[in-house]
Length: 436
Image (cartoon, rainbow, N blue to C red; front, top):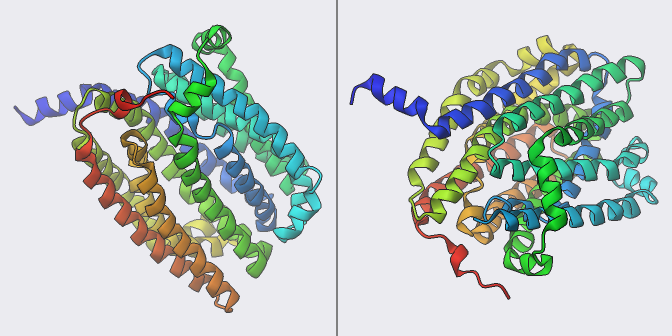
């Protein structure tokens, strides 16, 4: 077959077309934050970002629990009625957790501010419960729409979410530039795309199906029990590790260093989240279907890893050599030190970029237990190193060297393991699950 025919066949494949749809929308979501960032960083200070990033870490922790990770099971069942029932289960959990977050955080706002050594946090926590609800809603419904192959809507909604989030940060900041402004924009940026679900006939139809659904939620909860017991634990641990890392930096190095690091971490992870999300959102339903049909998965996983490495190589290489200059020019002189941190973090985030799109494989293969253990070892070592070095009086740049080195090696080992377990995909375990 001629090279041109091979290229045409590749481009015409459904997988590539769906990835292109998700990536086209998500690439706009990638560009928007960087276009608005030079405006945002010139009206907010690194200290403002310190309180904001602590809030986001707490919010993310709560959203992990918002469906107890049952939302990951929505794409698994062959019968749509079962998927709708899982969505109904997630909604019940979300409402309960929203109420719990209000009880846990609102009366003890000052205490949480003291723990994180950040006075702004007491005012920011008022926004946490609504953020939990709308963030969880976006996640749960998003998985059902992935199952329904509504890639164009999801891509467009992602652009609206990111645009409203960052656009409001700038517009609100022109009036009042504080950490509260950043948090308000973040939460409103989740409310807007969540409300837009009602414009989609598929969403309105699934609401009707949920009301008529007769599946026992208790039976479903037991059938997919590994999601809250293993998958949720893994995700909670991962987000908890990042929160503890932020806590260590805040306590030992103060708001300025935390703000600079958190800002760098956020903006360097945007490509990881956008590209990785685009690829994994299309890969996961396809891999789940292939696995249910008994097809091997190694080629798909290897191609995803290779594609991620090719996309990441040039930008991360440029950032490694010119991070300080880029940050100073783009974000302002006040943020030049953030560029130095960016240079140090490149190996860590480069390999994280590669692993991210295929990290859903253990969920499909029902190997979440091993994935959790392997992930926990690396993250525990990195946060332990950060704590010990910070308590011993090391400079922050030295701490960042250690965290980056441990995290980079950890991601490489995870990548090797994911590729190795891919050939095991040959039979679906779903038929072996017995409802208790």
